[in-house]
Image (cartoon, rainbow, N blue to C red):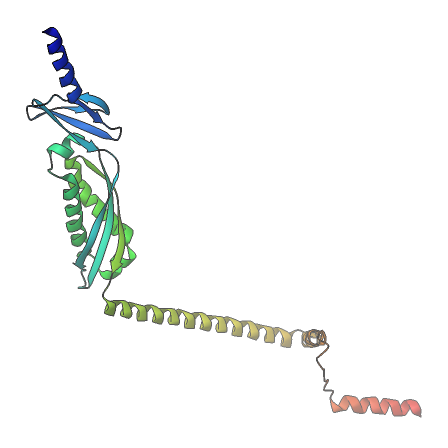
Length: 249
């Protein structure tokens, strides 16, 4: 008789073994009430009187689907994001919220729409990181009560209506042309100042103009294909002619 009882006890123990993986924690319930948290490994959960649930403690990446929102300056945009979080309290994640994964996704969607509605289009396009941080802070306040820790929120894509994209493209092109004109005019102004300074120096310093002329001739003569024509004043030629006549006499 005793061996029958032993066999039954062994069978009960065998069917009561439950495995909690390294990245999980298990919640054990006794007669439907929370009893204790089980660490990773093999654990005994006796049928009928006990039950359990496991919670994945790894970091999770939740894709927040496309959300249509209207900015403060009445521009319709489509925004999506990704939120990274992890469970820090397995007890709260099971006991305080029915489905923390679904709840996190829904809460992130509504928060993202609300935040986008509080900013202008320029603020949305130019301050993604700030807006993502605001979303994370708001979601974090509620997620803490669910035993969750929000690690990061990133805005993946912001899509605009086609008409708005064309308008922004024209605006960007006009801005680039404006900068190009300003840079070109600044360059011409600087060049004119340098040329005026050079002309003033050549006119004021004795011999400077002749040295510049010789330098230019030297630069031109470096290429054998160039032909240099000197223009000599007529007075100089007459002076040479007179000098030659005197020498012959």
